[in-house]
Image 1 (cartoon, one colour):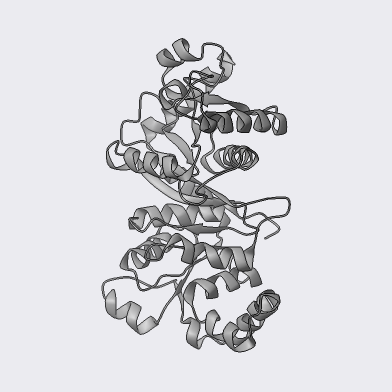
Image 2: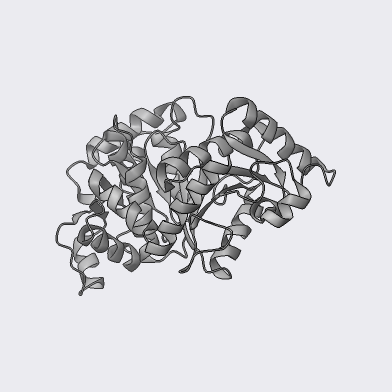
Length: 351
């Protein structure tokens, strides 16, 4: 373990010193050249992000909206290389409406309702993804999480063997890094999707997030199951839930570096970990933090972003059959570019 920690610290210092975390994500995505649909052409941040994705060779972009309105609202934008599609006038509208009808007729949807629903940009984008006409979808800059995820749950659905979709946020340390993060990045989950979890659901979220940390962020995951208690220091049903989730996660993924329950300082600060959890191999070195519920996770990532200066990318969804991601409505164009890159990296080869 000591040897692994030394290797991780060396790798992390290189990333922080070179400032290459963001660039590495974009470069790796660019090598894939995935086709990603952005559903909110009415939002200037999305248009700027689309332009930057093409200029920086991150992905091939499809932008949904009325071309004249997009160009009129963004006269200085270079839209060359961006495919713009108006769902209401697309030649594929009826084909997508028929697909939606087949997927939802058992729920009472009529062909007429399907046609009208397919004109909605987020539903249209999800149908493009379902049909294989794009590789991934990003939305949510000016729409609620529910409006973004509903088409995903109804059309894309969960991947085989996955009980529920969850999400994570990629938290990138400000310039100069962070003394507790040797690799300059930490993963928070679930900060944007599920309000509450069962113990098994929380365990599944932890395992999925560890996999995302390795595949997307390129870090070796060390997972802390967070609570207001460390190793039994407090007694409460909420603590018991995290303890049970930790037990289940360890059974399901015995080779994963995961421990809990841990308070946040015990998870990140070696000196605190030495006092509160001296036998833990994760405490004091965590780079993946699993919050016990959405309320804690959402508050936590926004504190890190607004007071700590971290760049928060996400929430990034896990568990859909094809990559579909929701943005924070407070996002910047740079956040959208990173979300596109991550979405591209989530595409499985069979997609």
